[in-house]
Image (cartoon, rainbow, N blue to C red; front, side, top):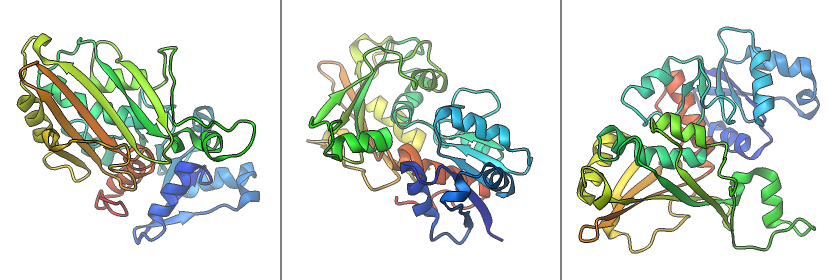
Length: 313
C-alpha cells in the first residue's frame, strides 16, 4: 500500500525538486493542492492532517505555524526549513552522522532536514572529533561556495534576471556579521565547544557546493597524519551509499559542480605530511544532498523503503 505525501510549499525550489524525485515512485502518492486550494486555510489544514507524511518547504516562521496545524498523531513530518534543527523533540535528519542515527530517523514522528552548509561541515568533521583526532574545543574554520539556487527565488532572480536587482558578479561572499543561522546547528550536531568561524560565499553556478576545512595537523594535540584523517572518514562512511570518500591526493582540481545533479556527497582528505597541513573538501548538490535529496532519503527511511529510492547516486 502506498503512503501519501503532502509537500507544503511545493511551488518553491526545494519543493519542486522533492516532487520531481517522488513523481515516479511506486511507494508514495503525492497529495496536490491547486493554487486556489493552497490559499484556502481549511484545504491546507486538511491536507496536513490527512497525509501519512508531510514535508515542509517553507520559511522558518511558516514551518513553525504549519506544525501547530497538525493534530493527527499519525502524520509524520519532515521539516526542510531551519526552524527545528536544534529543537527538542525533533530528530536530526542526517542518517550518516552517527551510528544509530538512521534508526532514530526510521522511528521518528518529527525529523528536521539538515541545512546545506551544515551537511558538508558535519560529514567532514564529526568522525574526526568522535575519534579524538580533532579536539572538541579546537577553533575550526569552515568555508566554501554554493550554487545560487540555494538562495531561493530571490537570489535566482538576482543572478538570472534583467531587472534593477540583477547581480552581475561571478562570486560573492556574505555572512560578515559572523552570526549565520546555521551556526547553532553545526555546533550542536558536531558536538563541539563553539561554532566554527564560517566563511560562506555564492558562485555563479545554479547548483553545486564546494565546502572545506583546513587543519594544521602539526598543532593538533595528537598530531594526526593525513592518512589517519582519511582512514577515519572511510571507516565512518563505509556502508553509506550516498557518501563517497575519494583519494584527495588524486584530485588536481576540485570543482563546485563535481556532484551537481546527484544526491550524493564526495569527501576528500588532501595534505602535506612535511608541513603538517590538511585540507578537507566536500562537494555535493545544494539542492540534492543539501536539500531535496536529503528530504527524500529521510522519507524513504521513515517509510521503511530503500533509503536511496528515487535518488541519483
